[in-house]
Length: 54
Image (cartoon, rainbow, N blue to C red; front, side):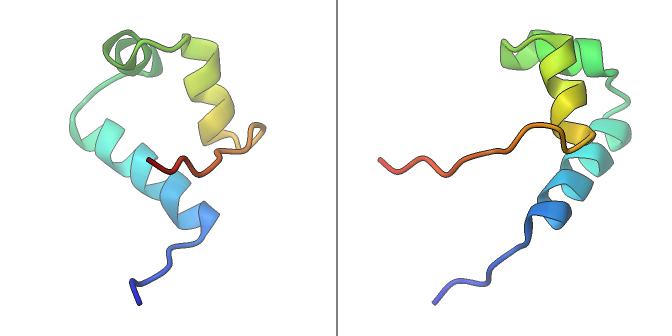
């Protein structure tokens, strides 16, 4: 069974790697194809990420 990571840890890691890569929320959003506001909402935990299964 794989290790489970809680939601807060996922958000922390997104912020960590975005900062480590020296990317603003805007640059991250452009690279991912999402709005800057959406990236900020994820990091502020005001939107819930959902699991997607193939």
